[in-house]
Image (cartoon, rainbow, N blue to C red):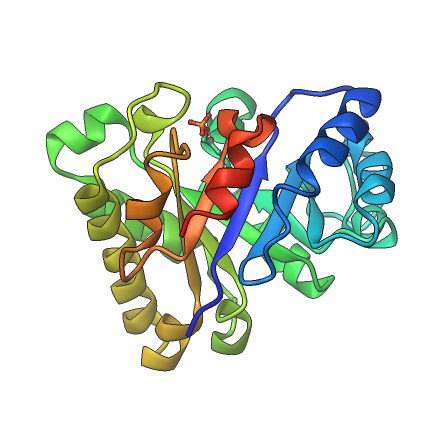
Length: 248
Ligand code: 13P
């Protein structure tokens, strides 16, 4: 049985002071050991959020990471900086990073490999645009993102990766994919993993759905056979996140 993983992606929200207040507010609401709970927060919030989350079931994750060890890469965060701060999860290749910061599948792959090398679990994002969905190329596109993103990753390593399927048209739009649409793509991703690796790896890897997940839609989405939790944006900044974590 795969343990569900429900992660908040705060995006570019919350100052360090606000981050502490939000962790303190959500701490009692997300106390559920049946699922892995992760708050992926802006880099400057990691240390104060980690302090505030001490003694709770909340894992603090990052929203991005660079693929070099250290050096002249102004503005970037290294994997060692994250591990030293106690970070165990990092979002890689979010569609917003792909769209606004030029991240390609090749860059995503380098970051995934580097995170794994440092013992950080990558939450590797994939997802099609509305245009791609309408053209009927969703599955081909997602397969390519997943295959390139995982190049050079061994089966054993892949089993520990988290993949987040986030259709771009459902992000921040209030338009959640239907449970059928979400399940269909997550099942296809698992099939792709079985083809690239093997059935055991496909059975172990955790696949999240993301895109306008809220307290109402979470129960149905998370009940699907191939959906192992969610990557939640807007609703992770509110009390609602407690309901999402306790979706049953
Ligand atoms: P929303 O939940 O705000 O649609 O954001 C989804 C997302 O992009 C999470 O990474």
